[in-house]
Image (cartoon, rainbow, N blue to C red):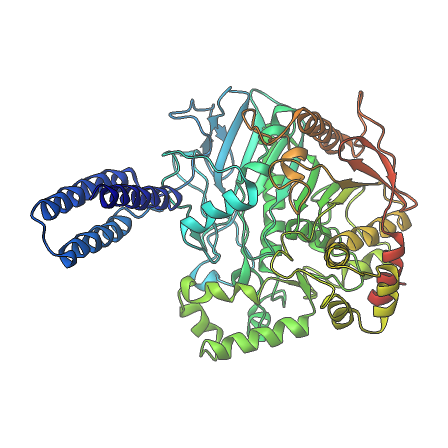
Length: 593
């Protein structure tokens, strides 16, 4: 009897702990925990009542099933509400002075130590909904009264998973999940997402440098307020930072001949890119009200955001909107960009297939569908294209002709870019050669000679390096040569620092370069914090004058010969480019001339 009782206590305690964990990971409201305690108390009471009367086993089973069923009810009744994300973590933050724009009066909030003023959710274009879906962005409407910019606007419409998915991703991928009741809500998504956020140093400013950031996410996911690339770190150093939302997935990159015909500019397929240009125009026209210099703007981005920046470098519409660029872990400078880019013919063909799949024959019918009916098509519509308007040719072709908008480039990639992308598609000695031959065709023998795997470990290591090079490292090598060819000052880096979080995987450098390592985080050591201070210093200096070098920092030499990069790892020093032999093969594979 005692053994049975112990089993019951252990099993019920384990199930109760799992229930608590589910509520926390799923971000359910506080009432979920309260109701679970009440339901569990009822379960124990009913179970003891049955045990004392020595009732049959099936009554006990019914009590257990009732407990589990009621928990499911609690889970759904206290589902996390959709709620706008606060601009700062401070409760009841102090408000800034009112800033007057052509659209109306604006008021932001201060961060915790009042060193930075934050203005969140500023509209830079009309909501692209209804008849404005798949049209060039329109000027934002003015507002009446004072707009309190203390909450971030919704992220661009995109596929979303259950809240528990993101919590588990934070635990498994980032290792820095925090248990708190302050985030028991889900972040909003919407087609109405053309807003930007500004962080500026507190107080009066004049002619301060400006950095405008384009977030990544394969042009199908992502949001403009993520802590890693928050502009707070740079703002504390005197640089005004702007983060923008833009149309994603099918809403930003759907192409259709009917849409091109109805456009006064004959464009289709680049709506997200046109949003980015619209945001830059807004910055040009309004940033001086915040103390920024519209003639000293640096455009930055990571992953698909960097690919966007790369394309904007050769867009005729972006000319004069920025002076220099920072590209982290992506460019579109190779002959055939490996991601986030496709030809107009490919885009139109995919658009036609989507219309057929959705049972629509006209754009009007597509516009009549809800955003939720369209959002899952993001997986096939997340590519920029040469539309003849935003892009008249590929960036590679423009650079070859000496056409570009930037006057200096800071760019680079991470040591283990591929890790997250091949996590469930690892190579071993059995499939290694097959993977190489399936992708590289006639150049496979060259690759296998350069990377001759003889063990599972070697096969896995080599495939990860080759994959990372194709999609990330090599395009930066192409950009560097094009920059040198056009006499553009160019500085390249390799980020290799490991840590307790995601280390040197894709996007791992951002929390360093934007100076946002949390003070209380135990996932970073003293070298991480030293490196972050150095990288933030380089990013600040480059944003000020196009040269990352500043007093006290190791010298970062230009990469005019495309053979030396700044190494950000356990040391900070110049090193030789490590993948030249692989890049030579990729030149032939890509058709570089």
